Amino acid sequence: MKTIKKIGKWMGYAFVSILLIGLALYGYIYWNIEKRLHKVYPTAILPVAIPTDSASIARGSHLFVVHGCKDCHGTDLKGRYMANETLLGTVAAQNLTKGKGGLPADYSDQDWLRVLKHGVTREGKTLIIMPANETTKLADTDLAAIIAYCKSRPPQDNELEKKPTLGPVLKTFIAFNKLELLPAEHIDHELIPITEQKAEVSAEYGAYLTTNCAACHRDNFQGGPPLAPGAPQVPNITSTGRVGKWTEAEFMQTLRTGVTPDGHQIDSTKMPWPRTREFSEVELKAVREFLLSLPANQAIGLR
Ligand code: HEC
Ligand code: HEC
Image (cartoon, rainbow, N blue to C red; front, side, top):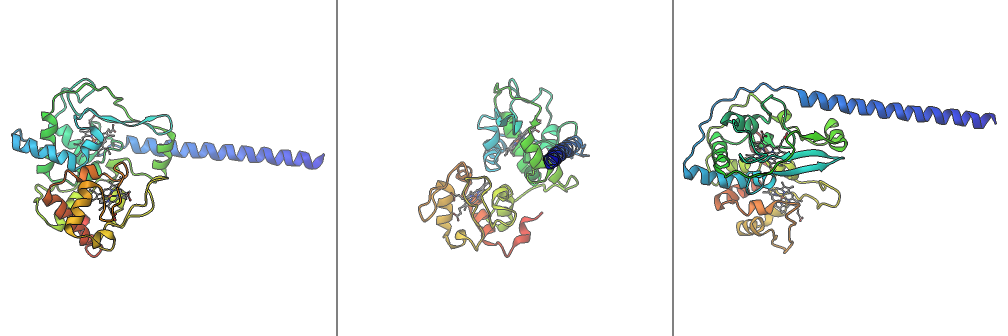
């Protein structure tokens, strides 16, 4: 009798302890996320002239694809949900046109620059998922062309939730720094802008074009374990990987068709080759030049 009572008592203690640990964990995650989402970042936005000529708009249209904007905001810029469910939360890649559900009528060039250079809202708080930690590294002339293109697009009606909310899964990953989804935290807000980036076949231009490849291929481009359960291993794309053995023609062919020299079809949902397919000849050659300069030339990618 006595031992049963004792066991019952210990089970009670264990239950209460687990409950308390759970509550403390929830409290920590809640406090951590609230603090980070409400932090106000100081942003002094230097004016950049946004062109309106057709050549700049055409270049902007190309860069909109090359720098991945289209993958999230869509071809017609009307936006889509990146997540919209209880566990992950609701985050929309916004409708970037002036149609219903789009940008406010008074959305200014300053507002565009604040997002792309600092990753923050008009209130100075971090955006979510929008990869401004990458767009902040773009040269002013390229950003200006992208903005010029976006502003020239016809209005599209698509009403998405404007205010993002994070569900428990994303909150937990962010609180424990397992996912970097708050771009303003990863931006040097004092960065001196690059005014222009020469589009030429050079490792430097290749490094500039590959900022968003690192999200999967890792900062050293040597790849690593799959990013999600069931996804393929992310390959090493430096000179020490298969890429190092491919000829220039084979490299271009792979990034244009999604088929590697040994006949492997790359899944476009795991590796964005429909985007690299749109890269120009100069851009692809520059990317190859940069990748082949690695790992010896690691510093070039760091800015
Ligand atoms: C990985 C997906 C992704 C990519 C790539 C991406 N965006 Fe976004 N973008 C988002 C999300 C998500 C939001 C909404 C963020 C929020 O509400 O906190 C957003 C918000 C924005 C906003 C702010 C709209 C507003 O309501 O103020 C602008 C402007 C924008 N993106 C432009 C761009 C441009 C230009 C590019 C390419 C250089 C780009 N985005 C690339 C996901 C993306
Ligand atoms: C969303 C994650 C992701 C992004 C972003 C990404 N890749 Fe990949 N990449 C992969 C995965 C995963 C594979 C392997 C696919 C497979 O085995 O089917 C791959 C394969 C490759 C390969 C083939 C390598 C080999 O040895 O077979 C090359 C080359 C490549 N990527 C280059 C790039 C470049 C350049 C960029 C940026 C413009 C980029 N990737 C962006 C995930 C990504």
